[in-house]
Image (cartoon, rainbow over all chains, first blue to last red):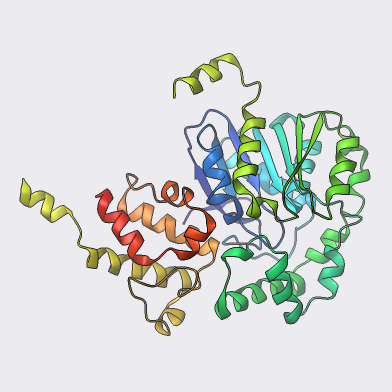
Amino acid sequence: MPIINLPNVRLHVQELNPEGRETIVMIHGMFSNLAVYYFNIAPMLAKHFRVVLFDMKGHGMSEKVQTGYDLTSMTNDVRDLMDELGIEKAHLAGYSYGGLVALKMATRFPERVGKLAIIEGPDPSEQETLTIIDTYSKEFLIHYIENFADTTRLLAGKRQLEKNHQMYEFLFNETSIRSDMEGEKGFFNDPAVAEISHETLLIYGEESNCVPSGRTLASRIKNATLLLAPGDHNVPVQQPEVIGTELAKFFLKDLNLYQTDLLMHH
Amino acid sequence: MDQLIQENKLSKEEIFETLNQFISEVIGEEFVEEMDISPASSFTKDLEMDSIEIVAFSEKVKNHFGSNIDFTGWLSNMDLDEIIQLKLENIVNYIQECQ
């Protein structure tokens, strides 16, 4: 199992098409893991790009750590991972909280980011996640898993429920995740967000509560395009082909002639 | 020559035993003991594996059976319902065909 030792944390990483000329780093959301991309969306992108997937700290098969769930620490992890893999510059795709991590990367390390794709990035001042954390219970969890968690459709049974229960218990009760997320409430109003100049694609589910967040970002980031896809907050799970196709189109657009030539001869 | 090929090819039983071992490494022996894993076991319903466990399982399959088995590529051609229906014997057959 590819576990990579970074200065601050050990992360589970999966790479597809390591020979690809340009790299896309994909960041999953809170309470999820890299599997949200692994089976459909990542293989579609890997036809043209090197694709790097990783489990965030405390998630999936990465190290369980008690602190550092804020956007600054999370982006330190992404930077360290890129350093470790020898990636000077990468396109980023982030889903939900992972979308906020991608945005933060563009504000902190603009020269290391190519294009930006944000899927369902929630405005942290509005999002209900914090309320959700407060009302957390096992009963709630069952409901949450059935309706909201983006790994849900592959879940079933007692062992899985128990496993998820333990993950939430750990993250909510033994880590700083609550206060770290609360500390990011003002993120959309950070002047650095309005200064992002990267070409940005914002994909939101047309039924999602997060659409207003997408509109806010579209109005603040000057080089951004908002795209509504059929679905809600779980749109990458509901419509992986649509999301994969749109991401591939976006990342392939305006590749230089040499690369286009390469693609045509593939 | 024929014999060489014969020796290199694993039987379905051997492949099944290997996959069985991977499953217990991924989900833990204590859970496997309670289950009756058979070729007809489905990954999500019978074995209750979630997507990240299937990722770990895929990794083991790739490392063990070699890179000419594009297990992830094979899975990525399936839609979610097909993955949910996926049985151990489907994978055994796929690996045997690739040999």
